[in-house]
Image (cartoon, rainbow, N blue to C red):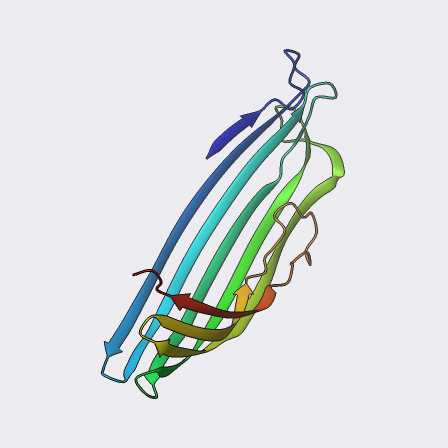
Length: 197
């Protein structure tokens, strides 16, 4: 991606932002599944690799300076998962599943405030160059009960734990700015019914 912004929205050369981003991403999921008269199951592995480079130049024409943050973020993740549904009878079935996720994110941030069109720092104390890392893992289970009350009525209840990965602040000028993942339990119950033919 390449974005050019003129944030002052005038014809005058006051300020501009030039943002160049390059992202490369690969993901792969492999699964095995089987269905029998009473048991249905699926198991698999998920692999993910991501690289993001962001070069930004924020130019202020009055003082003739340019703020140049540059960040590179590498993310690698993998997960193992499995889920099975077992029919206790023609009407009642149970489902249980679990997923284990493991993620690592690395960042290299470098930047500073430079004199326009030069490699000379306008503010020497503004320079920063650091690496940081964030590692997260999570177990996310699921359980549900399904009941076929009649040929037209299906009743179910379920509980699932969700996980959203934490990350790193690409605009940070010092290390230690990682944010934590988010977790949520989701409870659901419902009735599905066929009515009026």
